[in-house]
Each structure stands twice: as structure tokens, then as C-alpha cells.
Length: 384
Image 1 (cartoon, rainbow, N blue to C red):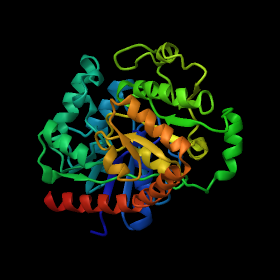
Image 2 (image 1 turned 135 degrees about the vertical axis):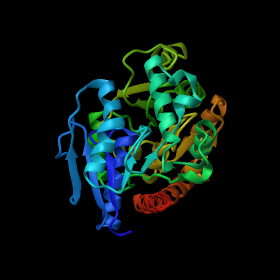
Image 3 (image 1 turned 45 degrees about the horizontal axis):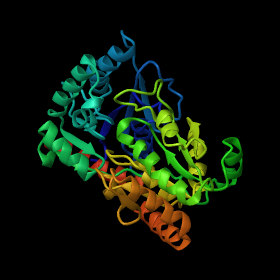
Image 4 (image 1 turned 30 degrees about the vertical axis):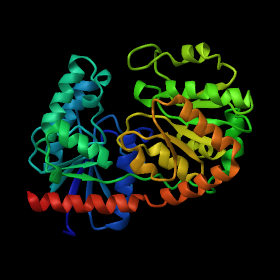
């Protein structure tokens, strides 16, 4: 099927800081590299300028929307994108996130990274959010094929969306090439100075919503700080919520004060994308305490930078980490603290995990992701 033409929903193209945006960009880049004859049309909503880093050879199709905001997004997904794909002459549509159209003149493949809105009630939102989830859940059942990031997510999709397992393919993600133990390391000193980072620190880089389980990490750090006093602070990096103290965003600053960790926790706030590899390389240990992930890319990114990882044996994380991370129960703060402490005070153990992590990260690559995705495209076209 060398003449295949795929139209890709580009709603998140301008958001490389999000999982869906990063996935869309890296997948298109890798598919173009291994299959130059593949025709790709990237259908863009009107809020995205056509010159935002689109690879050579990709056809851009800007569109117009009669609505803005969330209603405009739904309109784009349900009407504008499938019609634009047909107008472009595409054989197949790919929606790289959970937002497929209910009806389409062309067969549709969608990547459902997770079904958190169905798995955890706190993420279901208000009436309109629940209505949207019902819409995309119904649309998912009519897909030609579903791609997801892990076997754990595949099992959940099969169960919660009642989609047969033979229509679901698990395809792992990968760290970008910039996450590397040496490439770009000349910026590390400047990044340390910019964020005023100490010589030694433990890093958490991610969100602060309830599933990220940062409360357990903070409790775990009371055990670390008892042993090491103020020697190795915990650095929390990531965009804070607009307001702390809700079912979805617990009041973590108040919890820090309650645990008397004010002098041992450093809040960095939102991190520039280009600084993330340096942040991982500078950290002595990277901790990812999340309870629920469709994949858990930060685990792989830290490993690719040569940083030992402590993570939780939950959802997809064991699939990603393999034997290359210190995995603990997400409810076991004492065990998490012990794992962090062990890596801080036992250099041979840290070196062992560092080497295992580098080897593990090398097993994932965007070329492999692209090859397996192209195989799904061909399977979907044969079936349709």
C-alpha cells in the first residue's frame, strides 16, 4: 500500500507540551522518515498557524470553524475534520487522541491514550464533560481500529468501551532524541543557574492532579529528610493548578507545611520544554509516583537521560519500566522513601539502575512506533 494517503487531526499540533501534541509531532516525523511515499494531510483548526514546525512533505489543510472554545473543538472533530479528509482524497483518517467522529466518509483510526474519564470518577467533570465523554465513547465503538499506548490501557478500553480485543493494538511511545545522557549537556550548568538548583536534589516533574499521587511522595520524603536532613531537597517541577484544594487538585502546599517540609521542598513551577532533559540529568533520582498512566513517558525520558528512577507498580508503569526502575506500591510512602534513600546513599545501586534504564529506554523508539502504526493503517484499510 505504498500509495496510501492518511489525513491526521491536527488539533493539538501547537501543543508539544501535551502528550497528544508530542505524540502527533513525533509520529508524523517518524512516518515521513521511514515511508517518504506516504501521503499525509494534516488538517489544522483555524487557531494554528500553518508554519509551526510541520515536516517537509506533509500537506497542510487549514480549516474554518463557525464556533470557538470547546464547542468549536467538538465541531472540528465531528464535522470539519472528517469532511476535510474526504475532500483531500484521503484513504484513512487518524485522530491521535480520544476525539473521533461519530460518522465519517473514510475509515477512522484513533489513538486512545487512556480512558481516565471512565476509570476515575473525579475526572468526569460536569454535565458537558460527561456528555463529551459519552460522545467519544460511542464514536470509539465505530472505529476501524484503536491504537493505545500499553497493554494495561488496551485491557481497560476493551472492558470499558466494549471494543473487541482484535480491534485494539498496543503500540508503545518513546522518548525524544533530546532526552540523552550527553547530547545537550552543555546547557546543564545554565539550567541549574536559571532555576537556582542545588548541587544534589531529587526530582518530580509532572502534574499535580490527584492521580499523580504527589501526596504519597511528600509523605515519603519525610523519611528521606529524617535520614539526610537538608542535604538533598525534593524539587517539584510542573505547571501548578489555577487553584489548590479540590477533589482533583489536593492542596499540596498546605500538605508540605503540615509535614514540616517547607525547607526541604523546592517548587519550580512550569518548566520550559527545552530545559527538561537538563533537569533530568542534573537530578540524582527521578520519582514518578503516579497511580494511573496510559503509558508514563516521564519514566522513559528520565531513563533516557541516565537518571535512576523510582516509580509505582501501577497501571502501565511496569510495562514501561521493566526491571530498570525501583517500583513500589503507590500507597506505600515508607517503601517509596526507602527506595529514594537507597539510591541516594548507595552509589552502586544508583549506577546499576542508571545503566539498566539507559538500556531499557533504547528498546523504545519512534521509528518502531511509526512502523507499527503504519501496519495498523494497512490492517484498517484491508478490513474496510
